[in-house]
Image 1 (tube, rainbow, N blue to C red):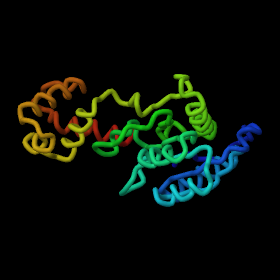
Image 2 (cartoon, rainbow, N blue to C red):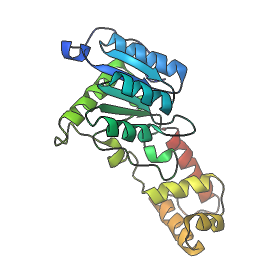
Image 3 (cartoon, rainbow, N blue to C red):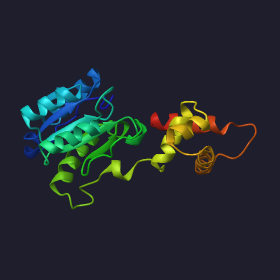
Length: 230
């Protein structure tokens, strides 16, 4: 759930009252709560969608000022994919991508980077109405003042975890239970190179060489903690 209760008080300004927001979230309950919270905050929810196709139809119909996008919409396009499509249609739209993941790269391999001037927020960090409204206004400022570093915060580009793309992919493949040989095949590299990469990853994770502890299991546990946002 993104927001667990409705605004305790009206905090919107007259300018905010004119803002139209499109909500894209595949989970019905979260979509309803998010929409109600935005309305209670003084914004106009012009529509809500659970998938990419419906989102694009509503976007072109209503021309919202801001869009909130769930990162993971199940099979098919992600929130990032939709953000790119919407920006092609309207370069001035503010966009907030919401996810349970601290880093969008944890969703799946070869994920596109978060577009410039898009706000990426972990859902656990927008668990109050005030935090949600801040993200909305950050999205507006980010696109209105693209040269302002404070206004154009792009969490996706900065990454929320200290790992490289290769290290995240290694953790994912190890968590799937794949052998070094199979990992090497998938990454088009040698077994020795894979072994060296895993050794460097273990060092970064401060996993000591210990016969009583299985490093691969520890790496897998780290990956699962990351995707749970722990």
